[in-house]
Image 1: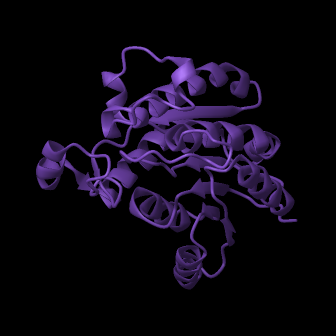
Image 2 (image 1 turned 90 degrees about the vertical axis):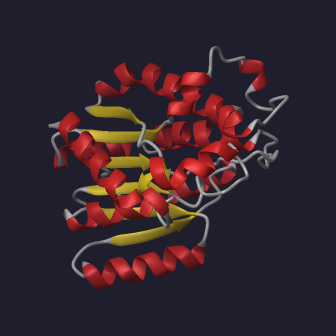
Image 3 (image 1 turned 60 degrees about the vertical axis):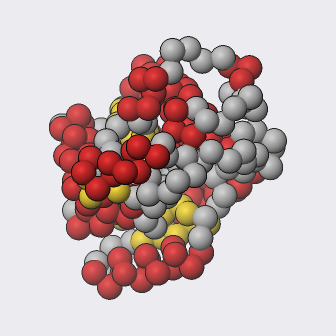
Length: 247
């Protein structure tokens, strides 16, 4: 078991803003636990990180975070490796206009965008509390979206199997609204353990997810070159905001 100092757990770290955040944190001296679905992409990322920062600890964990049983398994694996975690970045997400159901028959947006961050927070809570010894304040970063501004109300009965997926303005926006609400509800309780939970909107970012026509409205795809910022720039802005919040 690693008594790791300044360790961050990142989900969805092999591409887009997650990849850029992992590079920034590694450069700052963080040890990283990377949770992804692809073994091949994770192995490649680990090789690159070890080349650039040979004295730091980088560990890969493979899981389908849309699957509750996989979340429980990977959380147990992380707990067995790390006694202390000082940051949890819940970056992995889903945006599509296709109906995808989890192994537990829960709609994919809600399973991955809402339930997975909540479950990892609870399952790693002891390690996050212990991580306060290595940093001024442990932080959990959950990724929301400006799409939540289009959500007027949440029908809880419609979350697990919505009548319409609706792309960016449908199940995706609702799942991010639910994540924002759940994060707010947990905030006071987590602060008792020295854990700050932050909900961030990185803004329109050029990633493979936002470059797909699966869930993005056609007009945003047309405007993407003008309105969407590079993932590297958005990652740096986000890290700076998190650092300001915990200082």
